[in-house]
Length: 305
Ligand code: MG
Image 1 (tube, rainbow, N blue to C red):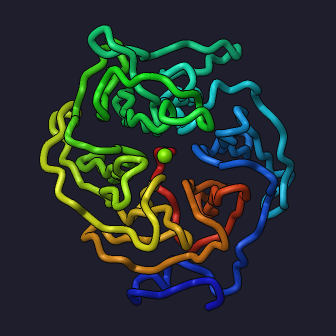
Image 2 (image 1 turned 90 degrees about the horizontal axis):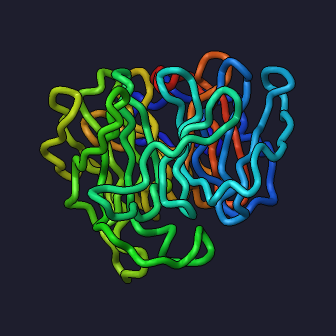
């Protein structure tokens, strides 16, 4: 199959031999944080260095759709997700916080400090079915002016859990050099976290780690689950069978719950992030550097965004 690499026979049932990789839009700086709004048949995505949030809308299923600006400036928004009420939750590099977009469009800052110190630059975010919001906080956005603005770090790179009811912010992992994308397994008993290392190291730590979730509040373990190559892992999504779909330098990699590479969807540019969308959550939207691609698959994304 053109543009598809089969590394394990299981992957054959997940891809479609006659579905092309379609370029939806291009001309951006670095796309990130794709999140699907099925109720609007819309994808929201960050154009990070250009400081704007974009909206891709399907005119009809299968069409190339329309790209427009949703918010500019976006305060260098990176990762996006939806909370259990369907509201947009975003990571802001510039404001060093997690925001929620209310129904009337106002922005609410959900978290910007931990024990009185400013967060670094929240990178990616997911919500659990209990309403809690989990996010990574590496310093990538404050290391350069390009992705938010050089500022001093006050906290080590960490992973946090924000309680959906009390609003309490709890540190759940602090042994990461650069926590990045994250995704829960379908039963939410496992949290996968991409680790992309120290930004300017010659050989940064780069892999996906697997952490056990206890009582919906704590993490344990953290073994290296899979090393993505070539390139590094950034954004992650999980499908209904518990396979992990990871960004990589050569496209999107599908990895079994046992950590085995099943196959790849090859993409002409470095991939930063991805998400399942479309009417059946089987269309994969791919942020690939300056270009947005989509491809229909024969697999469905897990129900959480
Ligand atoms: Mg990221």
